[in-house]
Length: 436
Image (tube, rainbow, N blue to C red; front, side, top):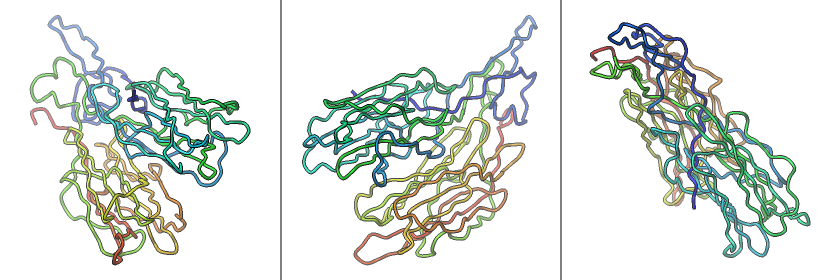
């Protein structure tokens, strides 16, 4: 039975001191770390109110590879899916060789409780020469996410014969109770002494598979910070009627005006523009390949008006199925809006094909406006990423509004992406005033 683990958010800032009024300033506008509005009953005595999150959204930030449990021959194959977390592991063998590992993912969405979304598909390592029999599985309980892993070998040949994972319960305030799940086969007789573990507060977003030929010999994790954006809090009785009920729900406005474009990171070529709605900003990019050609790219957009809405637009010139998705993302946190404001492309030196992307982020708050922050960054690369090109960034006080995809066409083959640029726009954060 498949598990649906819950996403692992960054701990929310809890309530602080009560505030006597609700105005248009930063604390009231975002209610991020806000403690309380006061409700005055008929007797006149002040009664403290502690808001609780009602609706929130979970985002991934960063990709942090762990060490390897077991042996690490050659480059790993990374199994991950944009917007998903590992929920179930399936193992298969052929002639005693552990030649197949499939990871099923669960997509994380905004819910009224910390829980996982529906199935998000699977990725697999499969080097079995024939159908892998004896498929067995290891599942993560509902409401949990993987934080650590270790493997068991057959001592005689270092083949994978067992896996143990640690997982943690996910709540709106962070990671909670922990547990373990184990799978093992006959001839599992050499457990690695130590787990390889995600950094504190992070969970696994992917699995790194190391194999010697067809035989899996080691596993590692790709970890990420998981962060909450609270879009609605419980409100005191005085604010639950009429227009005031939206006071604690922020909105992000993309300003009208010129839309400057950055230079191209990579090579200029044929160009396609990928844009979202009027107030949408870029939060992430995923890229895939077919036959070593980077021919597929998806841009994920986010809008706060004040409800959080997510949309995606895809560039697809593959002429068939693309695989090996890699994704980069700048996600909101509970204290500010965040989005992409700059990027760098990595190419394969011999043919300029896209093989990696690094994005940089900006923050937007009512009091400070737009601020570019180099500490907000995410990077993913594929094999043969060996030429990082110059960074391009939106002007000060502007953020990424659309992605410009530069691609090269070759007769009889999929188009290949060779460069990226941003179309930028100003942005501001505020909250609707009383009565609209």
